[in-house]
Length: 288
Image: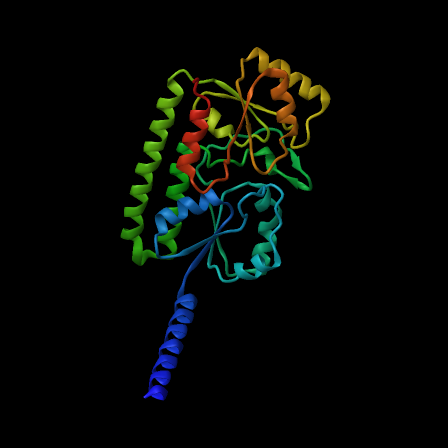
């Protein structure tokens, strides 16, 4: 009886392992560049695809280099959603495609009204054409990104079109609600100017008529003259808030804060929780 029970248990274990292996092999995978794009993508794909980010939490997509394991795992993906013009993509997309010729690539910045400036470097990386790449920090752009995701999914998986359309419409409602919340917060006695180390909120500022003052100078550490100028600008424009991001050094922000009596507030524009972060940024600008 004990032998029979052991045999039945082993059969069950092998069956379960086989089912898991089959499920993993059958699982369809989409790779995206950053966490906010993973949020938008997962909101629409639901359980039809697994979604993986190339740039992990807490590192800058301007300078990140993928690990050997990531390069191997990318071969399991059939689709890549790029955010558009971020440093990682500028440096790596050609090589990623050479190693994975099967990979279908969709550009989520298609249709976005891109903000352009002078090109600048981040270490060995360069923003091509001076395109401001942080397009996701905007409700207007978030709707375009969502639409681009939907269009791509219908192209590669038309059988589930109705499913994707329903989830897309639900995401649009969330984006609209977030946009309305941010607008209401900023209308209620909020600052119209803020300082930030890396200019990740260019589209946010443009959309809500705010002035973003950047500590970083052409993608590099600010010079003494630039820091002095920033202190003067901060006082002139009555800046109360300096935003700092986890990927960047806070020392210059702390020095400016001491000289201007401003408040340092941590934000994470690369957060997966897009709605929560957009509202947090807006609330940080509101007068207490």
